[in-house]
Image 1 (spheres, rainbow over the protein chains, first blue to last red):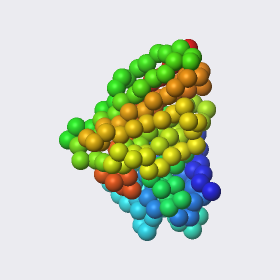
Image 2: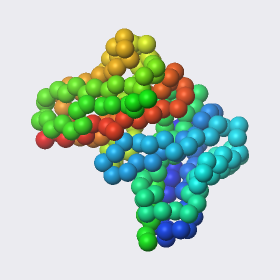
Image 3: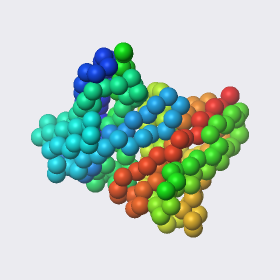
Image 4: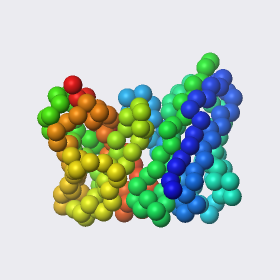
Length: 112
Length: 112
């Protein structure tokens, strides 16, 4: 079956690194995504990783994928107050077809 | 390139009414997907259209319907509105549906 789980809250200080974790259950997952949602806004694509990759780095963002444990993480280096938002992990899979399956989202709070 | 646009941004309706939401995808994108976001259920996939055909469907009642036009613009209709239909409705577009989805700002529907 399809299920994506995330911890609900993360609080960090400005300048620290943030690590947001996600687990998924569908072993046929093809792409895994991280989206960001600010208050009153839609979803902004942050980054994605293909299931045959272990790691992807994009400026301050690092995505790690552990396929064996079905675990995905997003690391934000030098976290800023502007990074405060809800972060969603999402997967696509052969079973879900074109549908994105989302986690409930992790609220990141950055204090100065 | 212009992003995904959705109209209207806000809607207030009463129970029993019907509503139509509109989505214009990124130029060149032929796939349009619709998602419902609520505090309780999170982000849930409604349906996806490609080349004017519904290609994928989530687990929602028949009151939720959609269509896609030849220019890839899509509309979503909800009939006989219920209080529980209050949500943020997000539209996403992608070139084929099996690649990265880009989201619009959403339409906030309130049912009184």
